[in-house]
Length: 78
Image (cartoon, rainbow, N blue to C red; front, top):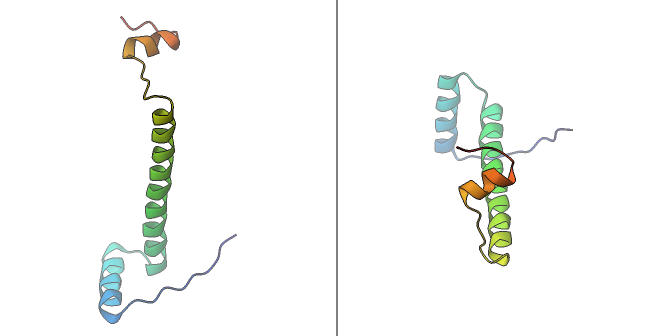
C-alpha cells in the first residue's frame, strides 16, 4: 500500500529542488522518496548498530580472535 504525503517548501528551496530534479531527469516526488528512503535506511542501520553494541557491552565486551572464528566456522585458514 502507498500513501500520499504532502511537503511544503519555501520558494528558494522549491527552485533548487526543481533545478536539481530537472537536471537529473527525475520527478520531485521520486527524488524526495529516494532521499527519505536513504535517510530512514541509515537510521535503521544506526539503531541496529546501537543494539549490537549494547549486547556486546552487556556481554562484557568479549571478542573472538580471527583464527578462533575461522576454527569455529570449520574453515581452514592457513
